Length: 404
Image (tube, rainbow, N blue to C red; front, top):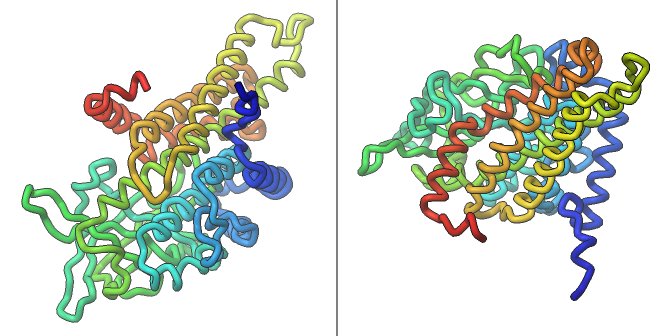
């Protein structure tokens, strides 16, 4: 029996993946870490650093090289999300909204003309993209959205409505809207009475498109901007419709699988940082004449965190390995890995605060920020409850997955 299989590292399966990880880890150490605390405190998106990621080839990881991308896969996305989130999950969330929610969607669903015109700009960082799906009264209930679009006699569309909780919805302190929005809007009702959803590419400067309020005083992810987007008789030309009217659920569900693995990988970066910091602190800190790592209570926090960290790492990279970005079909594990990893990261961050005591409770020592950032991952990209529902439904349909 060949022994080569023992050399397989799911987190770095090829030399190209290893080189990517090393490049991003060095970038995080030299550029991301020094600014993370300040921009969290100021609730400020570091757009200059974000655009530097474009020059590194990171803003179009899964984009074919002919459009200015890196032509990589879901594992590469997990690597970058993990490494960025080790230091600055807020910056990583801005990256995810751009690279995974906008750019990857356009790669697999846009027309050649749309890709030719837009992909080079978003891959370089000249344009910042976002996704407009959630609304003030509709989040997980996508089919309940009220933003609507009506076709006009000349073939253009008129859009009205609001989107809420949009990462990268504005890109600076002046309230400048995102350069381009992957927008879902209701365009009709099917024979069963369900909403038909259509995708539009809405660009800054289009009539009727503006940014509303910036959402401030968030619990976490403060280094990314969250905003409301407003569409008041917004005119979108026919060439900015993605696919056919009413077919958006197809690429929406496909990209959700990709997004959820990315969010799980963010959780892995948070967990690794918290484990690293609590482990170091347990050696440095002494009480009653001993390093605190000699006490059973501390050993439980570190030991359980290590086991859970290793479990989530294996699950995340195994799922990323199976993701085919142009297809759907891995909802069971993309939901499962996000369900497990996001809560695990929050729990490990919580233990890190407990181990570090008062030092863990203040921002300078990072784990407090990681704990706050981790909570969003249990909500965004699908709530824990939605994952539980999906997993239960999928296992009813395919119970053999349990024994596979």
